[in-house]
Image (cartoon, rainbow, N blue to C red; front, side, top):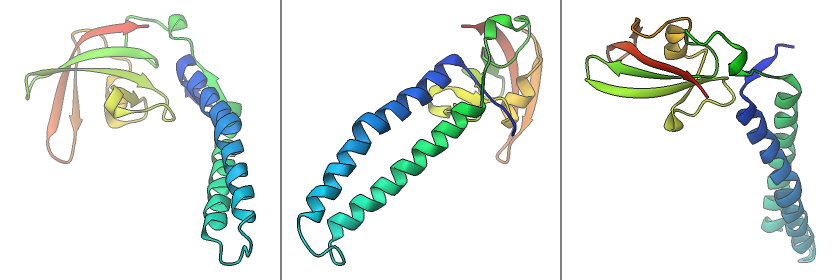
Length: 157
């Protein structure tokens, strides 16, 4: 199976989520199932069916997260050549068309969160930025418009 690149913080976040699901969510669902069973006839017990559905979702999520952790390849940005954009880099760019600056951190697909400025290295923007240096320009063809970014700063944290 193919390894999943991720940062140390992304790996830790997955571990924390699994821990939360196992120690908080799973016991709560088990209690809900027990309480619903106490109400009698399970065939028409909406609370019981909802709790069992929640339990099924939780167990599936735990298995999914465990698979991701098993395939994870934690990449240490400090071991990467830091003069060019690479996995783990935080990149400040200038959008010439909109005259706005943006900051992106290139992460694995499992960690991507656009609202936090974390973009996947396999996204169109991530692919365009990889291997570029400060002062380089990249062009991304988006459905709405063509975007041109100038790389202002690269840092690895």
